[in-house]
Image (cartoon, rainbow over all chains, first blue to last red; front, top):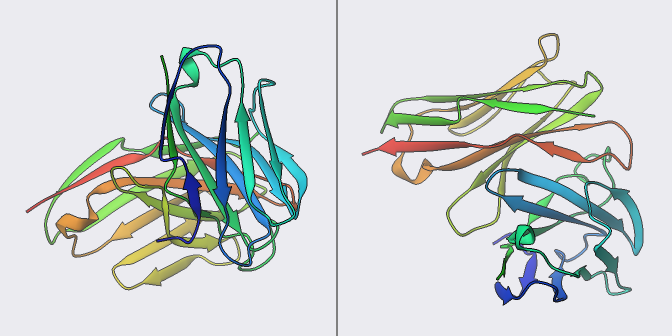
Length: 117
Length: 113
């Protein structure tokens, strides 16, 4: 158990809908990362937050957004869902920022499996 | 941007044998290289990592070697066991506080009992 929790575990919804995925980082971790894992694309970095502020963006679609709250939990919002958004969504956390010794090791949660019908 | 490739895509070994998984990266500025193990239905688990100022790191049956000149790094698993069967991902990250991890596509390791 990495200490990172994600809810829900599974989510089934229809095209055009909007969903929210939730992540609680390990105790003491300030950075939260979101990844999308699909069969053909592997693990793709979406976005990073550090202590409430957005720090890095990857290949995140404009239909997707995220935020990190004062208690450091994070939510990933996916809107106008398409069939191709079906994937596993992982949250990871780390103590701090990249480059800081022992602070940039990322620990992954169990993921949320999103199915768009 | 960084590009990480893993070879081979699948690997099957007999229990007790060694397994070697190789990765190459493209950005010479990358300085952090973690390896993750992902079992079915679970999230990736960090198993070992290495930084660019070190050539080799070992943790029990697992070791990672880094060749900065050739821009490749490898995961070595000795005395493989059936529970080592999983998908293994390598990743690379360049310098900078806002830099990101770029993952390889993953390799499926099967350990035959």
